[in-house]
Length: 306
Image (cartoon, rainbow, N blue to C red; front, side):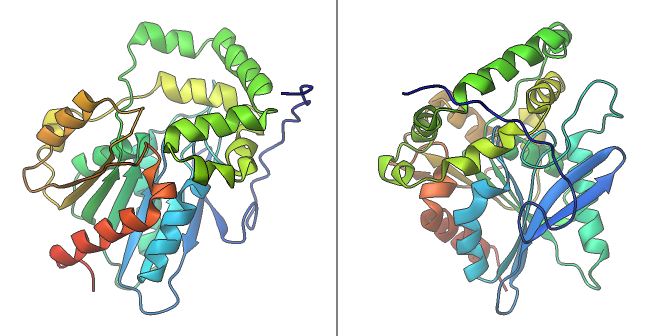
């Protein structure tokens, strides 16, 4: 692979306009949530709040945003705490549950509108679990959920939680980053098994995936987040009373078939389910057109697409 390059960790300079032209920051308590808004050129036909999965950030939805914006959907995508360009959680921070923060952000955005439309909440992988968790708190502000390859986080037992909060675990993960990030081939291999699409990976911009991991305290933040991880109960998601779209990848190596079956059976009977046979776990990237096609058809069927 060649000589190991030195990884230079960077500070998270959180001010408006950085790192993207449409970057914004929502301040709540000791947290700064980085989010971006993509507005359609023509008449707006709906609005989406997009939540990424583990190890991802707002760029994960680049391809899907292009598709939905072209269909008249305003897309708001957010970096969860400890990911992308949002606050890294460390010992001593005044902890706020991520679901509470995301609901607060949506409420804040609604307060800027005279007659706010209800949200279509989109979640991929771990973000799918967060999306369902949001809906179990109440659905009066939302009109639909779109779940792409959802994967529940582990409800962390107290003993394991203490391990993840230890300095040793943080240093171990930081060491992994230092020895993985310098090698584009390693990062590309990870993306390959996530998409199962060699053609897509060939032209993938590695910096999009690796740069956020170079932000100081990312390793400690991920440990902190994992220590507090939880997911909604299967019983509670079955009581969600708004339309749900569920899209799986037939070649998904991250969500085992028994998990697919378990969640599919737990969700309301009216849930619309599709499987993209040759897609991997990160299907919203290389299969964005197909994912959006299912999404728009789903919204039209439920009379949610103006």
